Image (cartoon, rainbow over the protein chains, first blue to last red):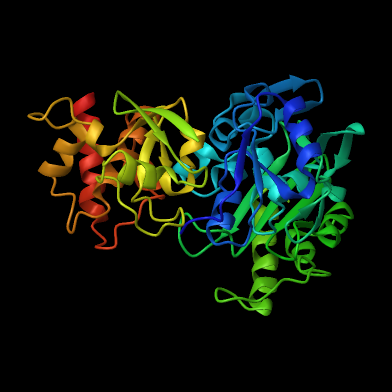
Length: 274
Length: 154
């Protein structure tokens, strides 16, 4: 499969990337590791006229300890996140979710920023960032702004990042002592989740993010509220599919996805120590 | 666009369209046809090569992304024409192939796995090769070969 022809620009800095986006407008698309974008281009579901390759902006590949948070550069590869001692120690849920993305070859190329900028409801990492109440840092002509994970995923393959903006950093609260669980149900080892759930329970405060249960990555707010009010794992998980609008496909009907959301959320809450 | 890529230790320079995938570049510009195209959708791993020493799926990398980088294909693994790489030797001895189509990708993924996890358990080998499919389902001997190669390296 061969993508539609495009003009290729390689950005040597974040500033240059922004300048190229400003120049080409919505004709341009950023290329990081390429493991969301290139498949779309090969299927010709995406046909950007201009590709701005930011894959070599090594100054956006880092994991830093910043007090209450970890700051993760948008171009940090999945492999570097899943094996990083700080992430494993301080935000083990994120390390676990990242280690479930694709397969080793995919994780050698794919980046955390590229994955979440793609805004795919079937991706693993957004569910963890929603459960953890992460914050995204977006750089654009209007300056740098922070967007809460709740406001970041706006629709199917749509995020709060503007056409002329660049996602630069993901800020994740440290939760070294929290109970957590990442649950993923799929058909084969490397597949996308049919449904998945990220659970974190910290000092009685609960976060639940769901994979593939709506047109965008979402939180299970009813489950969080039930846990915070003292409900058992089984009682809280019964509300996991409330308010969700999953789609049906070859792998699973709507009803089966709703069932999976309840089962995986219950298992996750139990594993997280609820 | 002119790309300069070090392929199997040799500098290669070619004028390619930006949309050229690395696997097509290797097979058609460099005449290195050991790297196979299987699913062409980053699922099967038949096209696995090393980019700067790490296993990647060359159907999901543009050649322009590898500009200035180092690529190793199955042809570049053996130290000489007379001697196989230890992983190739282990595949040979354990009969870790049936039709052989997945083999180049399996070997490249397995070498990359042992670089990261030198002494894996059987479970770690199976999980570590999750990105490579063998449609003959010859997984048992493939896993045996990787464990054998790891043992030889000990």
